[in-house]
Length: 344
Length: 270
Image 1 (cartoon, rainbow over the protein chains, first blue to last red):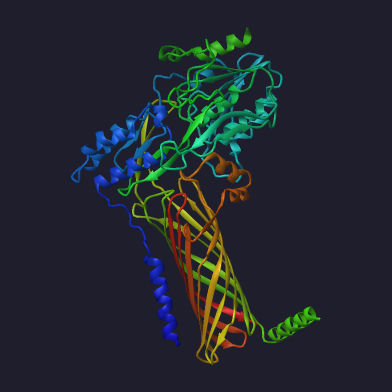
Image 2: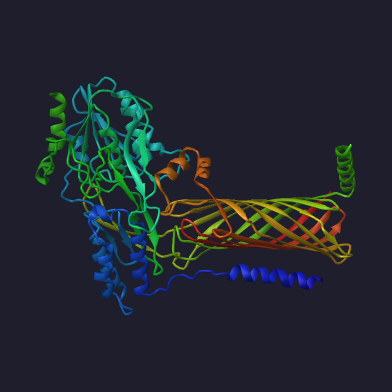
């Protein structure tokens, strides 16, 4: 055997290994893009039964609308039509020329203004850096904390983001109060870990708040094992009565927070129902450059109910809405009801 | 008595080998090409071109070669739609106005590998020798995109090394390894679930509890390496190598991975 032989053998090995069944990208035409998107939802979307959508029927109805000659705008319109059926705000599709979010998205008929709260209800209002927490006194006995988001988008090695840490000093400042209003209205969500961190300040023991099932196969009922999610006590413990305020723009991880707080006996949930989008939404891409997100989880509350689409309802008798006229007049009916409840 | 004879024989062999042993430490900065397609995250092929480095320690005696190498690469991962600008809309919560903006997506791919290979000479001619052996491979891979995905493979299998010395100063080594049994940690079918997120944040080592044992029908990999060495000084060699690896993993959704590393470097022998 000589050098040449060794090199030949090596090159053959390289060629065999690199050519062995290497997959190509899917063809980039309208029909293939439709097939890839439909199939990915078929394999990974977790909520067909909750939404009452027959995805195979969707294929039958919408596939004929796409041809090789469909324009990008026409294909996007078909995607909008079929994804609208899911009524799921975590399902989104984005292209260079258009953007679509299934479900109701941001509800412009949910009236809330942090400025109304600060100007008309709070004594000496303060905010943390980034306005993640806005807080102050509603009365000398009742404190107020608004949480504007559940994420800052920062990358951290910890399970939670740094912006949540001031909650401990804020709660220490409220140690002289007899009750608190925790307001997550218009909180669009973020990281569940941040929600658990904050909720942990209001519990004296570990509490289970939901159970998640994630798709683990292409079958409609292929879900992984139940993952029981809980939150732990930590930091400054606040044990007095709490009213949790939500509205229809309380979404995603803010709904995890709502479920967590609802497990605590001294928490009363008031306001209006939450959005109802709790699943992890994972991004996928199409060969034509568009990206979309899929809800891959089914999440059940402690009663076995899936709040997707319906949202988490406040305690019976405590559903209250604000009107635009009230907010424009500087009145926050939901917050006023919470104060009345706590004073009584 | 028989045991003593065996022990003495082994010690004698070791002494002979130690007298002829050679340690080599190599530093190989290189150019790494990684082509992959992971259907857990995307239907598209991705490629990452990156600079990296491989550190190698080799212990060679007349009959045995032990080789340990560790490599690290990290680079931007691209595909056919990289650079696309995406439109998105959101409502300003203060004003209620609908705001339109554009964003682009980036992806990063990180690989760390640790390999240990043991080869023993079974045939030796005047210039050519054959060294079959065993290879242990550890791979740690992370893809950073819209959500991070974690892959890790620990595998063991046979390897075959061939050496061709065509002068006192010049040598070519070629080797091939095929893992037969592998412990594979892959992201879940959908990409992420609550269990993986909890583990990743609380103790990433727990991710290894989600791994599976796989044989070649589900984890097939072949790696090959060819290198040319030229001795400049008794303690210094020049080196150029080409290293390639193909991997196919069937679960939870298929992943194909191919790497080609071009490695110039220097070896210090002592």
